[in-house]
Image (cartoon, rainbow, N blue to C red; front, side, top):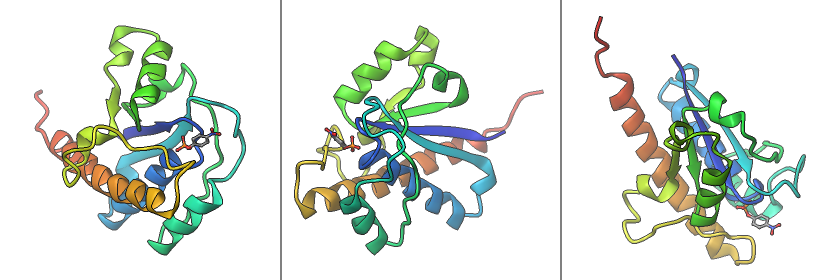
Length: 164
Ligand code: 4NP
């Protein structure tokens, strides 16, 4: 069975498509592409259909990630289609909680910073849109950290023995 992960930010042109690209690469390197379904979306639909922001694409490409996702808005059905919905900041987290169709669905919502082991003082992935170059690098550092954290936890979960 696949573990399906949806990364969510505001515009789906900076943080979440980068998280999607990084997670793809991490699972690919481990030969686990078939075990994961990975996508991203934004709580705001104003950038629908757009490629990631050119600043994020160039920062990501310097680390070897090609970001080709087209922006889309998160929708209620995503709570059926994904096992984990990972919010970048508190505003995304609150928006997702309002969209969740049930309490059970809301339990799928996580904060990316929870999985970042090398950034223990950060509680959210900051919006780089109005920031300079360092803002994008910090986001990529946090996303690499958080995606590795998600993979480790997923592997523990996947390898748990199932009872007959
Ligand atoms: P993201 O960044 O949520 O990481 O994709 C942003 C993209 C666009 C806007 C804000 C944040 N915006 O205001 O259009």
